[in-house]
Amino acid sequence: MAPIEPEPAPQATVRHPRHVLVTYEASADGRAALAHALGIARAAGAPLTVIAVVPHERVDVGCARCRQSAVIWNHELGEIANEELIEAARLVGPSSAVAYDVARGPRTKAISDAARRSGADLIVLPCRRRGRARIRFSRDVTERLRREGRWRVVVAPPAAASASLREAPDPESSGPRSQITAS
Image (cartoon, rainbow, N blue to C red; front, side):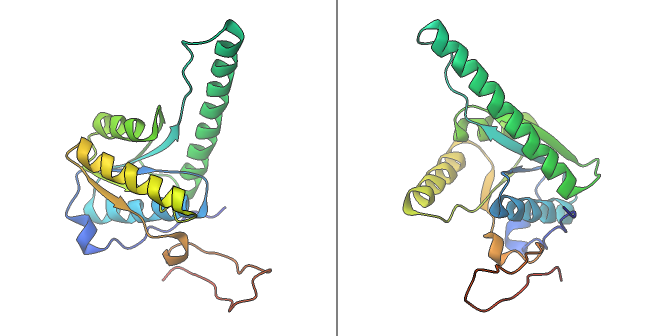
């Protein structure tokens, strides 16, 4: 997987952040959010923190077998998050201005806690565009994050709109074929 190029930061979003935080997930939209955040951070000369969110289950209730299952499941979720961050590090390439972290807990709380720990004043979220429930969920998270702290929240453009990602045309698509390349 080739390193991504930072997406040129739109002037309306930059406003000179001191620290940028991006939630990364192993998807095309997650890569687009990473490229968007990287572009903003580099344009502003700000450090970037990349996080993967792990929605841990409670382990303090239920029988011993249920608690043990939750511990094992939480461990596996943590391993998946670590793998996502390794992929993000490969995409970003070597940089001393980028930090990586696993945020645990409910999505909004995990992101806001990570933003407080890192001192972020701009949070970049990946676009969630599939299905009404996911769009509604994404709007709820965005609005709650805006209310919880003194940071700005930006939803990155979807992967198809990201000029910095290289996508091969879908061989099963019957529509027009185009390839997105870096400018």
